[in-house]
Image 1 (tube, rainbow, N blue to C red):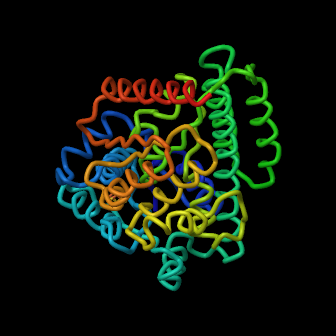
Image 2 (cartoon, helix red, strand yellow; image 1 turned 30 degrees about the horizontal axis):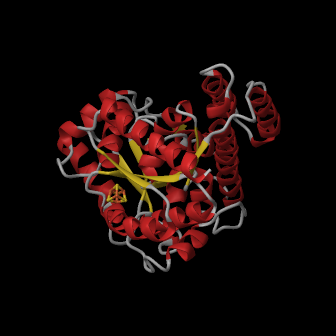
Length: 362
Ligand code: SF4
């Protein structure tokens, strides 16, 4: 069995670590590129959301490298994600790509089914080993998130342009290469040291912007045109409403790993505007925007794929929140027809507006 999965930001680092620790052969899909998107958009229904198209492209490219089993998360609720894996699998079958499909349903609702799927993938491994593997993957995700947060702080303040990106790239390679949990502490120390060597100006005035929205678009730089990096180079320190380790903690570890934010906190903050689940991360988008306003952020950017149902609901509520809490909100919709130049123009205008407001208020 040669298992593949969506590339999605740094998710591949954690999933590959978990599976390889359990002795499962893994085919990491190549990083998502224009080719991935072209393949996915050619074969997916036009109105499918962008993550489905990119996943499809990932799976076609992984098949070319010998993968024969897809590992996908399942879902339930009002958005399309619940039948995503099956649609992708059916398209691949029609194209002649023979894949086994293993869908990991959310543990809260399908615990028995999830355990059976884990057993199917990991074979004779004990539950203790499986738990260690999940913890190993989580540790990698948490470390990468810490490093990314540091990069978000450094980028707008770096003395030499590009030094943060170079340092983060090196640190990422070190974390990805760790094969056993016992080596994590050393890798963490090396990676943090590399980041600490980036020269920065702590007194440089910067803007602070919170990024909210659909999780795939938030985590995959190809899907969002590397928005966080672009904003960093425009002098904006960003914070993202969902990091991968927070998602793992909320959905797979039942919040037991602690951490600075939880889904519950975002939903509580959303309650005055939206007090029920609308699928995906729509409720968290509204709640996180309210939290960013309360924390004094200069603005909020909502990222969403074209036709994303939960984010359309959130987008219709954000103007009210913006009016009541006085925080500027920019919604960016992405699909395969989006253009980078147009996005840069919109970001520059938004940043200008935030500078203007800060100047007036200051
Ligand atoms: S949350 Fe949005 S992008 Fe994700 S599957 Fe649902 S509709 Fe598609």
